[in-house]
Length: 544
Image (cartoon, rainbow, N blue to C red; front, side):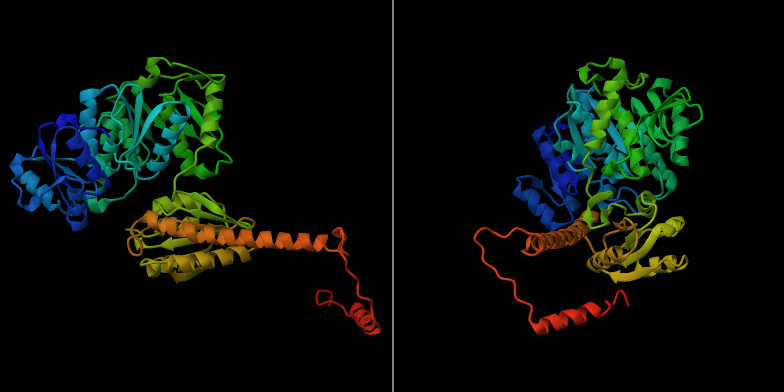
């Protein structure tokens, strides 16, 4: 836990008592503040009360006594309209912030130079954040991993010299963090998403920019025009050795890029460094981009590797100065770290194989842009499970990839809309309704196909809320169903192997008779002999 001592003696309102809200209340209380908790869900209020936290209906609270409202990131701040707590706070002149802002203030107070890596992007941020932490831990670093991925930030160990916080930040969290200023800010991409919460693409982009705008060192991908615009803008503000670009071929001085391999750029020169081929947890170009970002970010905090021996890297390396090309020790270490990365659940997760069929759980693909990454990872032979609560634009943008799909299996509320889109390209499809039916039918069709390596891919391009609580529940259900099919296939294969072995070992088939065993071979009677002669003259069905 990170006790929030910067708020000692103050009274703060907390709305939203999910995992991060409760962690925030505990951290504030531990730091000497008085958190006053509330939630629209009575069960959440009861949970806080059982923990001994102070609960109070904020509808009726005297708001001017609060130093701040700590808002859960899932609660609307501005769109489609501000939550009622936000309206009450603003009317009383009370600032509205989030848990990451509390962390930033605590870091500024107790350990302002403690390393803090913040990662954002419309897609890929969880994988990139987890991979950065994995690389640093493999190097023996003290790493605190959390934020929008897994552990709430205030449930982590506090900032300290020698500790590196690696934090995933959603747009909702950034919007509640006005003093966010990480050691390294990483912007992966910006594509339309959450516009119902941010109003316009311009607002959404401006919020994403804030993560890198005050960073000590910024790494920005040239993946899209909004990100490129941000890079050009900040290049006029940042010192040249405190900002770098990803995938910006064409003469930029500092950065990293992906061609067939991951490489480093220096003054427009590109040198290949790492090959990601054969790493199942980093399958597809999108994951190669995630790895590219993680390698470049993590390398700025690694101890030097020289033939496997670690020494302390010059302080300027961590502060953003230009680094030399990776040496042999660094490359060997990084390749081992990449190949040992276990990946994340629900993000191109390889569940298993049933015969030739590969099952992939990409339930996190809640929009078309994410599903595009999954479809692009396989040349063909995709048995695609999709559907749920559709987002604006549906799957129209995926039409160039439909040729890779053998058959589509539709589930949930988007079935009619998606079926119409698929029909325009004559994609074979089946309306399944539920995930259970879709997995069963897709597995059966994949096994019966003549595709060399068929892929049953759950990449819904939809939110899950029509049939599931969240994408995790949807992915867990797919994993259970797929593993059942995989286990059945293994059991069948094992039984067949045992049967073949028994037949091979049977007496009369070249097998060995057990010691002391008595058996007799029945004599061929005249009737048996006649039957044998008739059978030998009758052509088989295959021959005829």
